[in-house]
Length: 120
Image 1 (tube, rainbow, N blue to C red):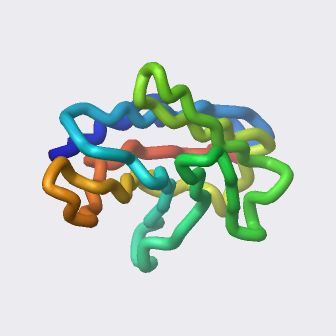
Image 2 (tube, rainbow, N blue to C red):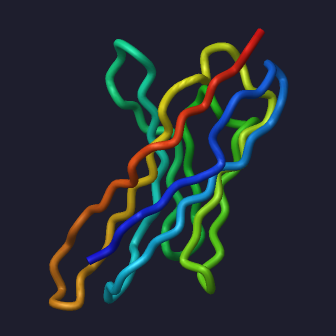
């Protein structure tokens, strides 16, 4: 099984930057993709960005040009660099991993979430 541990959230002024980290622990045949999602108070969880095992990245339109996703396979860690943070970005940010287990089941894991607050 894979467990995810996020870090890097906090309080930042509008226009500032934060870098979130998501470290994957445990054993899997392959981690197929990492994704970041966010959930603001009173809203549904929404997808933010994804990076696949081949390094291909996609992101939602509202963060294009501001957020960048990268991964360090040696550390089994993915990073979400968030720049030019806006008042609409505050939320709990969750990391997700889609992976193939050692017995070749397709599974998904979620981190505990890390809060991001943006002050105006």
